[in-house]
Length: 224
Ligand code: NI
Ligand code: MN
Image 1: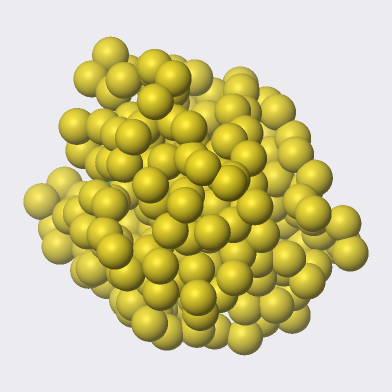
Image 2: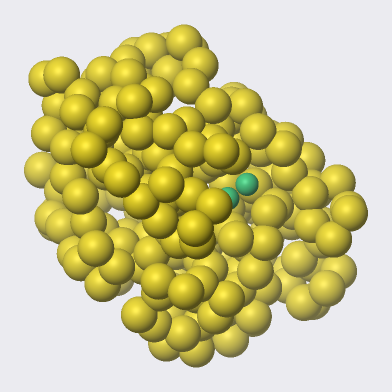
């Protein structure tokens, strides 16, 4: 089945296949590069990598408005349940996988932090999304770590969405190494250029043997 990925800006993506739309790390209203507002996001599911505001700020209101099921760390699910009265929650932790109507969601490790307004939000994670027979790896926010080879071996992703803005995460050179280690045929850099604190120069993102696909906010790619 056709799988389409729309880049919403920063680390936010919409993944569509058949009757399912999954929002990954929806962050629109405070996002200076986003072309859409949170109100415009229609989705059936939401998947969250970690609890920082630039990843979950709009998740609660969108989930409430659309009745979307939220997948994320145990602590993030508890938080969104308490603050937005959400009931369709799938709490998880790294290493775990949840089967869904469209495929599955798994959380991987990420080397980062995770809190919201001083509250502990559980482990920071990467996300594996299996949908329409395709597999997408969203790195979340992370440093480069060599177990990305294991993520590639375990899940064989078709596309890798990799943070590359430096300072808080991998920079472009490390993200290129990540792309090589994950081994997906296509890698998309993300989480860069959103603010001056993050580099906007992706000239160092040159993975060997992997197609480096630069996406602009609003752009859609077809997987496979
Ligand atoms: Ni973060
Ligand atoms: Mn972030």
